[in-house]
Image 1 (cartoon, rainbow, N blue to C red):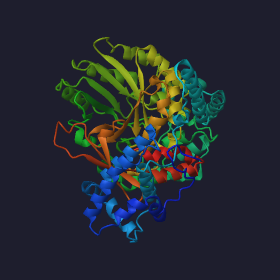
Image 2: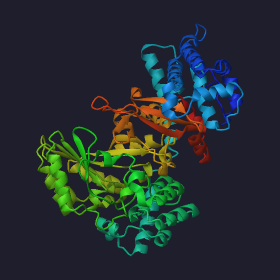
Image 3: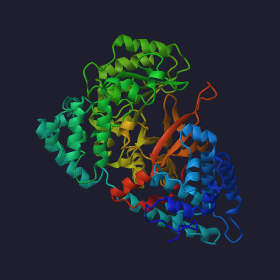
Image 4: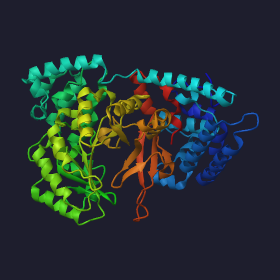
Length: 601
C-alpha cells in the first residue's frame, strides 16, 4: 500500500544494520568515505543540506507533507551531526555511522537505533511510511460551492474514522458502566460496613481509604503481578492508598487499566523507590523543588506565581506524582504544616508584591476540613498583591462527594470580581474516570463561579490513538477546560508510564487537531527540572541532539529564563519509540496506525 510519501509501508519491526545499509546506500557510503571523523561529519552535513534541494523534481512535485518531512528530518540530522551534540549526549551517532559503513562490529546498537536512522534517511529522501488520519481527505479539482460540498463530504468521512477510533474506548458516562459501578459500590460499602448515605459522605470515604492488601483483595480482584507489587510496596513502607469510590471504578471488564495504573505500582517503581527509601530527597526531587524553594512550603519558578504547599498528603496516592517521594502514607497524621510555618511562608509571599497568583496544592488541600481550608484562604486573601487563588486538587476524581455546597459557600466568600478570583485545577487522566459523580462535582463548582481546568499527564495508559481526544470531548461535556497536557516526567522509577515526546506531538498534530478549538485548549509541555514548562508546540524551544544505542532520543531543551540568568540548557533522554511501539503491539494495537510517529521531532 502506498504511503502517500512515495514509499512502501513497513509491516514489521525488522530494523537491522543491513537494512540501514540498503535503505541509505549513498548516505552510508559517505559515512565510510574517510578515516577522519570530522571529514565524515562535514560530508554528511553537506549531503543532508543537499537533500532539501534535490529530492524533488518537475516529475515528482512535492506535497506539503513531503516538504515538511524532508525539512524536519534534515534539520534533525544536521543537529545530530554537530560535535557539540556528541558532547551533550556522551555518544556519537557520526562515529556509529562510520563504524557501520566500514563493517566494524557495533553490538551496542539495537533495533531502536537502526529504526530511527532508517526512518530519518527515508524522510530526508522524501520517503517513509505512514499517514495521518486527516491525510485521508482526497484532493478534488473543484471550485466554489461544488468544492465546498466535496470537502464537506470528505470531512464527514474523516470524522467517521475518528468516531471509529473513539468507539474503541469506554467511559464512565455509559449506562452499562454506570450499572456495573453501582453494583461495585454496593459490594464495597457492604464489605466496609457503610450505608449509602455514608458512601456519599466524603469524610467516610477518607476514613475508609484502603491501605491494606488483605482488605484490598476483598474489594477488587488483583492480578498476581499487582498483588506482588502492592505487597512489596507496603513492605518497603512506600505511600499507598485508594479511596472506596475510586475502587468502584475498577470493574474488571478489561477497560480499567488506566484506572488501575494510577494507583497500583509497577515493579520498577517499587524496586527503585524502596532501594532509595532513606535518600528520597536527593533521588526523586525531579523538578528540583528544593532548589526553587526560597522558604519552606513555597516553590517559585516564575515571576508572578508561587506554589504554596501547606498539606503534605492525599486521600489517594498517584504512582507517578512528582511529589509522592515526600509523602509517608495516604492521609498520614501530622501532614498539615504548623501554623507558624504557614504564616512564615505567607509573610514571604507578602514581601514579594510581584507575586499576584498563588497555587495552593501539596498534597491535596481539599482533603482538609472546611474550617482549616478557610483559615488558609483567609490569610492568603489578606495579601494585597494576590489577584487569583488557584487550588490544585484531585478530590473531584478520587472523592467527588468532597465538593459540597458548604465548601462552595465558604469559597465564594473569597471571590471578589475585578479584585480576586478562585479556580480549581484537577487531574483527570482517562475517559473511564469521568462519572456522573464527577460531573455533579464540576457543576457545583461552576455554579459557585469557580472554573475547573484539567492537567492531564500523557502516559502509556492513555496514549492510544484518539484516547486522549475522547477525554477532551468528555471534559468539555461536563464543563472542564483542557489546560495542560504534560509529558510524563523522565523519572527512572516511573519509566513504565513514559511515552516518547514524538507520540505526544503526533497526538496534538493528528488527533487533537481534528477537534473543535474549545476542546483542544490544552498546551503540551515538558517539565524541565528546576525551571518548569517547556512548550513542545514551539519547535524552537528544543533540539534533537542524538539517538542513543537503544533508540532513545536525546533532546536539548532551551530554557525560558535564559535572558534572566546565565544557565545551561537542559539535556534530557526520552523514551525509545521502538520500545513504545513494541509495548503497544503487545496490548493488541495495530502499530501501522502510529507510523508517522517517527517524523515528529
